[in-house]
Image 1 (cartoon, rainbow, N blue to C red):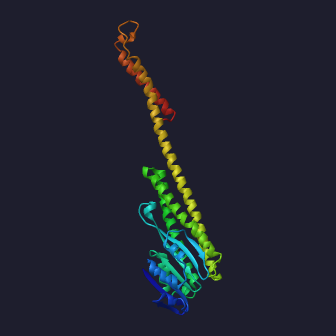
Image 2 (cartoon, rainbow, N blue to C red):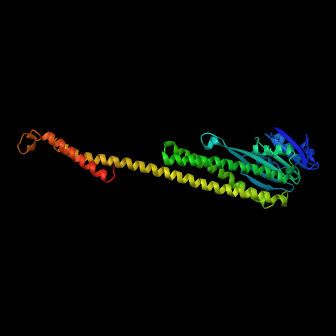
Image 3 (cartoon, helix red, strand yellow):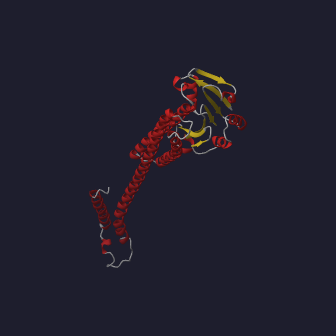
Length: 326
């Protein structure tokens, strides 16, 4: 477990060893907890009056949410990345949880695993970026959440590329693995959708300025994040429609291929049927009576039958070709 504490303002930043003492310092206090342990996190929670149920949510697997308390607001979001390689739901989509405890002039972030989006903002605070240093904790929380949402766009960009590749494969040559890839994409999109919907609801609460810790100047930034989430939800629905269309095209192509095979088999069976009849008739043996197939005594009977059968097959082939069955 690592606990880093900085206090920053327009005059600069200072690093504190004691998170509890930093709460009353002049400026904005940010306590960042990474890979927390139960005992270590309890100390931070006691110093900032964080309820045990909030800690339980921060460490558990729960939906993104916003909860308002008397002196702070609890915000839970989930960062996600899509790893490169074969597109599979279990291996490709990596979700990391991030909890924000937002006070009037302090911010506590809890990351069970290090989140790159928060790391980016943390580095900017340490570089004393003026835009961050001159604003409060609500703006810092916005910057972190905004970076989390930007990662969602990166995921959908990668999924879009995979959808285009699958669509080309369906049109060019649909292999047996195409349907599996389509289903993998649909599962990935479903997983992203499950992240986006509750995140949109949570950010919507912040965008309306319901929590007292969100200033009017910062509300517009949260509204911008909310608009991005609305756009992301629409993109997910569009991509789900595209994957459904690709699946329908694949199934139609498979059905057409099956129909083509059945048509060819029908042609073969139709040609063989009269030949089988002729062969069956002349394969009967009724003895030497003169009324039993007298043509069998003709010296050219066998060649005549073979020529006749070949002619019938040729006529049927010509007919089927004219009907575009072959």
